[in-house]
Length: 165
Image (cartoon, rainbow, N blue to C red; front, side, top):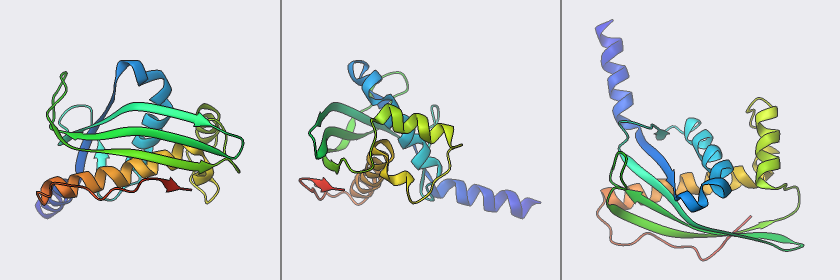
């Protein structure tokens, strides 16, 4: 029994926990993406989400979305911050994301997240065609890069002008 608790503690220490936050002005627009990001972290083997006791804050800011007939263009800033409780912690690293998602097989972020919930949160190969989950996966990957950059004390994070999906 003691060994089991020791191993559980060891595994828990390896995971990095984030509190995902958004600006009030972006809260409604980013809610599906925030929920999708929480889901992606729940499937992650390296990170997770906590409201209290997190290791870092992960802020989603300055959200912009533009639709054309062939693609959806998204832009936002992802910030890795020190834990701040009710306040915003200190910015440790940040990265601007720019995504171009082909409109084939995508729905609006609210529609696709509703369908995802309706499916019982089951992930299939088709699921990652959903705009919300595509963005959530990019945010999870970005969080990992920001965290690693901070831990390795690198001053910059590799930047990709656009992620084409």
